[in-house]
Image 1: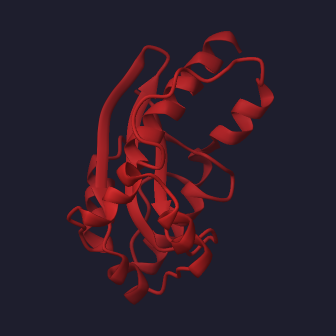
Image 2: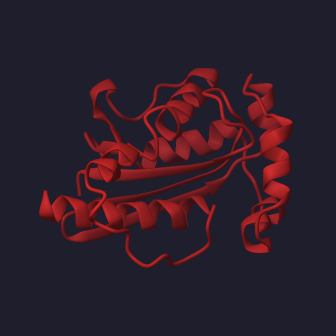
Length: 168
């Protein structure tokens, strides 16, 4: 497995947003592999200099009970989550995120805020949103799991990316 689909949930929509969960799954043309998921303590993100905004908090209040359950689950300090993710991350993998300026960039900035190096190389960033825009005729698979669950979203996006890569 040489690719990782990354998905995060945040309390903002800028490049230095507070992260509340980080989910990822390895994938290749044969399917999904190892998974990673941890919730992040928002206070630790704020202490590291990351930001939240009221509009995103209000948006979360309008999401499903299943999606909002993230706020009831145990959360770990940002530095611990980033360390665990770095330990999990496969060497020399490409890292895909949903948006050229969102998931990957926010996680990169979180590593910088925590004075840590991210686990992927500068040239390994990939954009799932661009990939799916290039192949709009390849429809996403049936949605499983909870919308706005970082791991469920990562798996869904990876499965769709696999379908696109099969025909491209």
